[in-house]
Image (cartoon, rainbow, N blue to C red; front, side, top):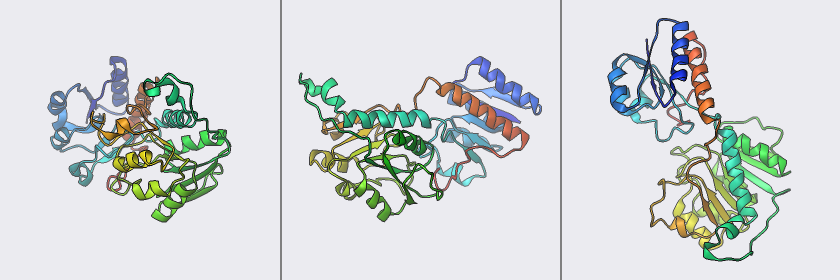
Length: 316
């Protein structure tokens, strides 16, 4: 069996993968650093670890399992791979702690008025809002890895936590309310929350989940934070809501087009913080990726249940 690694692992890590492959059989490990190299190995490949390009998958008739290096799958589940009998696993939960930290960095910056001082848009003044989050209500949309990390941090601020999720039914003790992800429940959560964090994947069901109607039911004093995927928020509606004072501010680590083009109205929207899709970044990320790939490869070669199997048709 051929195992194709299409990711930037170092020589020592590639050697570890080779040791795992030889431990459980006479399996071949190939390392590609480009699409051209990956295509050369594709015809006999059963496993891809890392990038899985449509061209490579199409050239790999023996492909049975893909381990993605991404947590979100919205940009990767192209039609052919959804329909084929190929298992896809992702990195869901592996980048959650840093994602939770980043979401809170955005929320705290908004609530404490940090951008008004360090950016000041050319002004040199010490005028800033100062909102206390302790004891407030936070709404979290999605209770996967990112969502639960947001919950842990919200408990540190003694916040009342409301959540909706399309799959999860067991309510963690830290959460006051967990409801199904219906439109009615979404609006109820938005209406009651002082801050809202998005922790859901981007799917056809969540595309523009937050639009003008949803922003209109939020408190004028509320903040909105998204660190998962661009496109979940209707950005034109968000800009209008910020300009009209419908909400107090927003923090985005992701946008529908990345980076936003120079003429995007996002750049001039008031009380909006944009960071460059770095919520998942961490000094530990390369190690976590390597360790997870290694563990799942061992599971596959031993015939055990893989971790983080993606529901390809649902998108996560």
